[in-house]
Image (tube, rainbow, N blue to C red):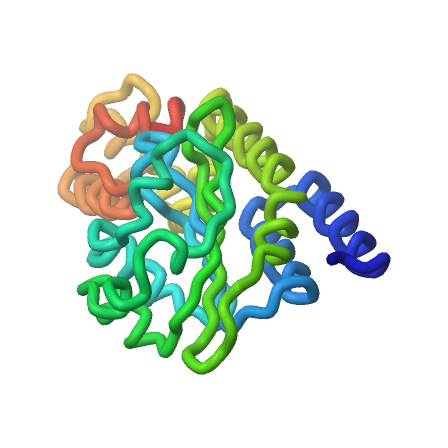
Length: 249
């Protein structure tokens, strides 16, 4: 049963969800404040890719390293027996221990590879969906020897899940409609000043020879700049540049 102070914290969390402009800052702030209502040792918050809602990306976490969070995505997500719940299109909070019998759960490859390594035993998850579109997942973990999460903990997440889902949906809609300019692209992907200038020319209709002439460099040097840009944007050729920068694909 929530107390008066708990409702004040929930109200503050709801305000932060809608008022903190930076999405990563908002997610981290929400998890920190939830620590006053839900006891946990580690937490993570992934959002899905605008290109593929089954691809988790941009994790933020508490007492959970970025390296380990990406290891989950790259190596262990397919072993996660709760993965199917992510793609049901339902905005739902649940305890991982309710999905699989205890004696089965602790002997799965996933439990041994992730929970045992981190020293966890119990977890609580919030799948965030809006209009049946999967947008992200927030998770909390408790170390071995501690009690399981309670239904009161699930209730807390139920109180904020619609607000979080709506915020992520609006963020996704903005990303899909917003065309980045070269400066925004430079900031997002960590381009150097020289690479930013190169990007501006690449987004035009100039040939490689014309760009090299304007930049007063050789075509060979231009190719090196281009390869650095393509690597940072995770593309392989110029034609993909327009989708990545202008269409946010």
